[in-house]
Image 1 (cartoon, rainbow, N blue to C red):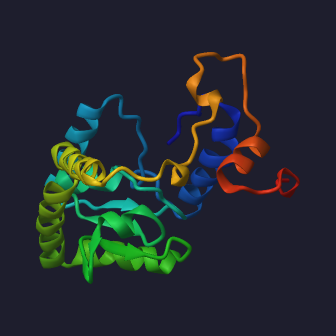
Image 2: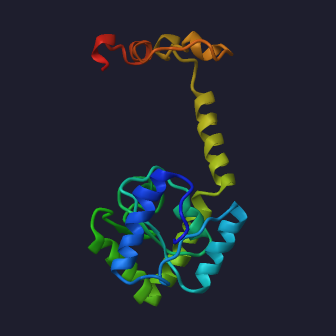
Length: 200
């Protein structure tokens, strides 16, 4: 945390505010940040933190699908994750949750999620086991490939569709050239049948 960032924006907008909080709260020696150079090093780090009953926290305001919590959980780290975005889809099935969901705009709720896992060994162990099993059942590369194959088989099994109902492929996407472009207005008109003037 004491090392300067390689660029001015990261230094002034990210690291300096964090360092001020660490100073104000006397947290030096309790907060660390480090680079991880490879996927194998990341997996090793996750396994290392499991030995210390650590928790993986993803508290971004919004997250797309998000592989990070899945990778951490399959390595054995229970997860505290944002309730907004991808984790809500990948780490929940029906009413069953495979992590602790939190409101990322509420420091109090983030603290609650972390405290639940840190202070209650039985919940830490239960989430560790059930989340790992859930991911191995639904989110391995093999499982993903099988789901794609099932979808393709369904598509192929459909009798020939009326080609008028299919979206056309614009010639731009069929050319192998970097020198031609297609405007947002053209794409909007082609695929959404909107008036180009509606695009701002």
